[in-house]
Image 1 (spheres, rainbow, N blue to C red):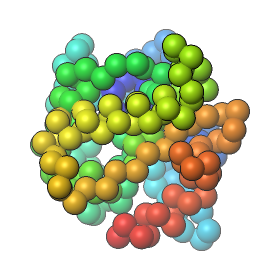
Image 2: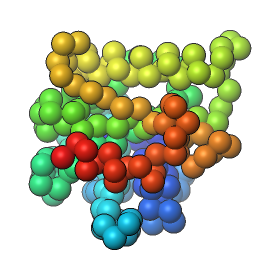
Image 3: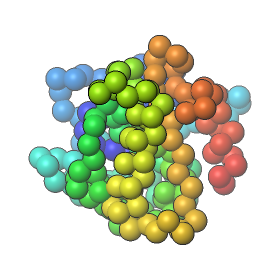
Image 4: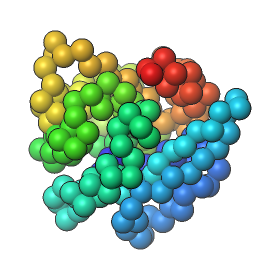
Length: 192
């Protein structure tokens, strides 16, 4: 899940390892979620591509309701991939509203099974900032927006993981440099 144009469909295609979801930068996103599947180590992995959660500067309540209706928490959803762009330099109130709307629909426990995926990580940071410091700043800003939007306290037992997409290094890597796609299934089994 995430806002429009952040790379949700591209992330799905990266996980599946093929162009399973159509991407067109000149066309708006679909109205409903799309589930695609692949086999990983003898296990069927279902990945759901969702429409953007913002429509005309407001939360797309219809999209959230459809997602919740067809993919209930703890029955269909094992991991939430919250997708955002690394190359956006500011978080704003809309980011908090999106995270709050997800929390309102699915409960705070959705964030206990969340992996925040940062796309567009191939861009160089502004102001000559070292890349690692830039990633830490963006991750910190997202975590702050999440805590405010989802009304989470620091003492809440919520563990949020980050991954970022840096094509020149590897298809999808965690901040420690580990490729995340092969380890996604292993992580989801730990969280269950």
